Image (cartoon, helix red, strand yellow):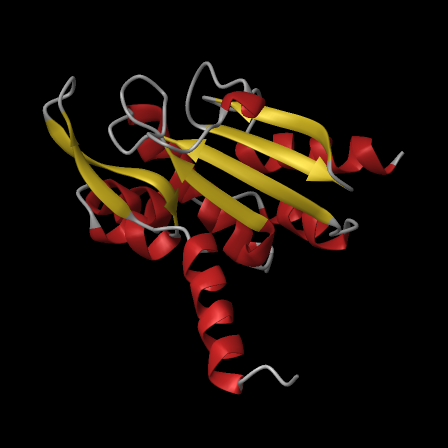
Length: 173
């Protein structure tokens, strides 16, 4: 018996829509009494909300070290990054735009990056992030072949680009 094509299309559509994640969702955090981004986000979402004004300023003002950027470009690029931030957090407002600037300068494709915004309790509503063990934001978690290879938590030890290079290089040894 042949399955009608319309049935297959409907099943595929329902499956895709159930898997789709809402992106750049805004809520009012009652504890903070302000509008924030929550859940999965992208650069466009970060630039469009109230976070956007600090994003533009920090992105434009931050000048990564060119010699470190060149070294990052030459590293093996088979890693992924999960960035967990809070749009209400001063450290996120400072470090996240700088991180995007480094990605741009090093010509790193954003497809390796997953961005998750948390609320004032460092939760994400229905989305579970317990596996990431987040205590402070922003947290940049680097993975290679599914295994965590390092983190930058809240503020870098030296600079974002130097800490990033150290994490990537140490995993290549």
